[in-house]
Length: 118
Picture 1 (cartoon, one colour):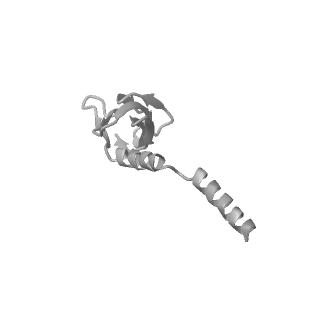
Picture 2 (picture 1 turned 30 degrees about the vertical axis):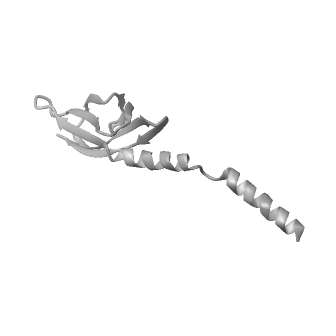
Picture 3 (picture 1 turned 90 degrees about the vertical axis):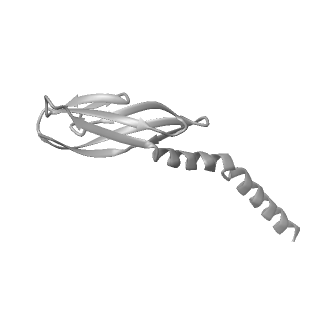
C-alpha cells in the first residue's frame, strides 16, 4: 500500500510541475483576443489600377511591433502601410503577418484579403 501511495504522489508531483501556469493560459487567451483588434485595409490607386495600397490597423492595448506582407504574387513587403504594384491583372490573396507585443509576450495573427486587380 505504501508503494502505491508513493507512486501516486510521484505522478501527482510530475503532473503539477509540467502543467501550464495560469499566466501561460492568460498569454494564449490574450493573443487570441488581440487578433480581434487587427484590421486589414486595401484600396486601388485611382491613377494606376495595378497599384494596391495596403494598411494594418491595430486598436488593442498592446504594441504593434511588426507587419510582414505576402501579396499573393510571390512578392513580399514589410511595414504597417505599404503599396504594391501587381504585374498582371487577376485575383490575389494578400496576407499580413501582424505581430503584437503585450504583457511581455508576442502574439502573431495573419489576416487575409482577396483582392482583384484590373
